Length: 386
Image (tube, rainbow, N blue to C red):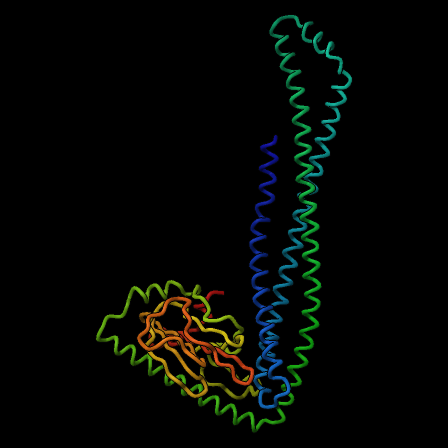
């Protein structure tokens, strides 16, 4: 019977273990989003009130709104998971309570029987009145089994009572945790309304000064086009120079096998995604194709290599400050908008090694990162770990 009880408890608790892993992942993602929002808030405060930075402030605010919505969604999912865990544990607690009550009734009967026949002479006479030695042995075995059963029932009741107390404690903890997250969710909703209103105010101000912002957009587009041309040429030269020597096929295969698991070059929120993007304000304005991603990072952030390789180029490109190109066999990664670099052309770098420090201009800290397969730009979001 004890074995059956343990199997039943394990069967109920196994899904809870899986659920705990799921909630841990949700908690980790929520913590990451909260860090991103905190950094975005810091940069927004640095830009607030600066007319020339209104576009950047709007970009950061919209990125924060996106992160806030994801944070709200993650919190809602976490609350549902916690509520589900509470329901499962309540069902287990009810089952344990019923089992304890059943055992208690049976135990009470055994105790009453033992009390009624508490005079040891009654037991001796019961054995001695047997018709033969075989019957006497059976009666003796019965009495010994009765005593063992009495003790076993008491032990089972104590064990189940302890398990029930643990379940009730965990239920209280889960309920408190869920309530805490519900409070955070309400705060998140309130913050989102404020951020959306701020976004609308910034948008209205930018719309009033369209001509100046369109000039700024054209300048930025020229810088992006120049970067794209420079990097494409650098990769072409690196690819052609490798014609005189074999490409490191093993390194290429190793790099490719880590797709979706590469470490991020820095911690931050993506403010400019990969691909063809429309301007965030003037929807009829198409931006140059973004060959990588741009991240808002903390001041003084160090950009790190996402994989081992060889530095093939270190250059200064207007609008993107110092740039470092690293070759990984047939793959390349680019780290730009750096104010200082820690490597030189020809250096061998390892995964996680410091490439350089991100530049901060007028309160804005941006890291632009690209990943290429041969001469084809790849979406970093598909290669970097979640």
